[in-house]
Length: 302
Ligand SMILES: Nc1nc2c(ncn2[C@@H]2O[C@H](COP(=O)(O)OP(=O)(O)O)[C@@H](O)[C@H]2O)c(=O)[nH]1
Ligand SMILES: [Mg+2]
Image: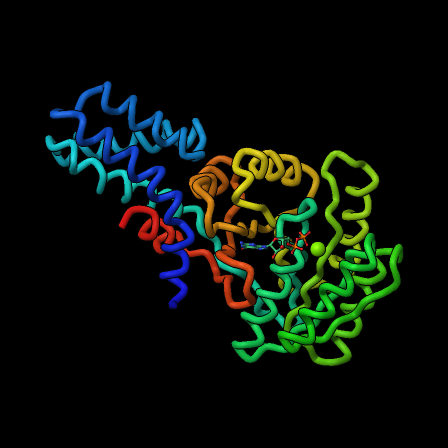
C-alpha cells in the first residue's frame, strides 16, 4: 500500500464523520443561505477543527461563493476543500535537516508515540541513505532505553544510552559528541514524557536546549512536539502549553489511523501556529511521512 493510501485509510473515520455531516447539510438545503453556513460551521466545529478556524473557513467559503456566483449548495463542498487546502498549505513548513549533523528532539507527554516516532523517523532517513544515531534521553524509566535499543537494532541506527536516572541533557551531549566523531547525519533524541505543568521537568528541557544550542551551533535543529491525534482537544491543550515553554519548530501528529478526530490537525496548524512536519498512520516503522497539506486535504475530501 502506498503512503497516500495509508493516509486515506487512516483518515477514513475523520472523513466519514466530517464528510458525512457536510454532505447531509449540503443536500438538505435547496439554496445557499445563512442557515446553511451556520450548519456547515457547526459541522466543522464538531469535527475538532476549532471554533476560530471554522469561522475563518466559512468566511472564505462565503467570499468564494459570492465571487464565483455559485448557486448550487453541492458546489460548496469543493470550495470548502480548496479553502481548507489553501489554509493548510500557507502554513506548511519544510523539514530542515540539511546540515551534518542535524538534530531532531522529540518531546511530549507519555504515550503519545515519541519512541515509536524516533524509530519511524530513523527508518525514513536511513532508507534515504542517512546515518542516524539515537540519543536515549528518556532516562526516567529503564524500559524506555531498552525500547529504543530494540528499535535501533531493527532500523539499523546507532544509539547512545545511559543508566536509569542519568541526566538527560548529559545523554544529549554525549550523543552529539558521538555523532560528530562517527560522522552521523541525523541525531534523534527521545525524551521522557514530561508534564508541561511540572516546573522541574520544563527546566530539564531548558538544559537540553542549552546543550543543543551550544553543541549544535549553525546546525539544523528540529524540536518537535509529538501529539496523539486520538486525544483531540487534549492534544491541542498540550500544544498550547508546550508552545509557551519549549522552543518548538513543529509537531508530529501520531495515530491518525483509526481516529475520527483528524480535524484537529487543521486547528493545530491554523490556531496554534504549530506546523505539522510528520504524520504517523500506524505502529510499523514505515508508517510515517512528511506532512503534505495537499495530500491531507485530498485524503479528507476525495
Ligand atoms: N495506531 C498507532 N499507534 C501508534 C502510533 N504511534 C505510536 N503508536 C503506539 O502508541 C503506543 C505508545 O508509543 P510510544 O512510542 O511508546 O510513546 P511514548 O511514551 O511517547 O514514547 C505504542 O503502543 C505505539 O505502538 C501510530 O501512528 N498509530
Ligand atoms: Mg517513550
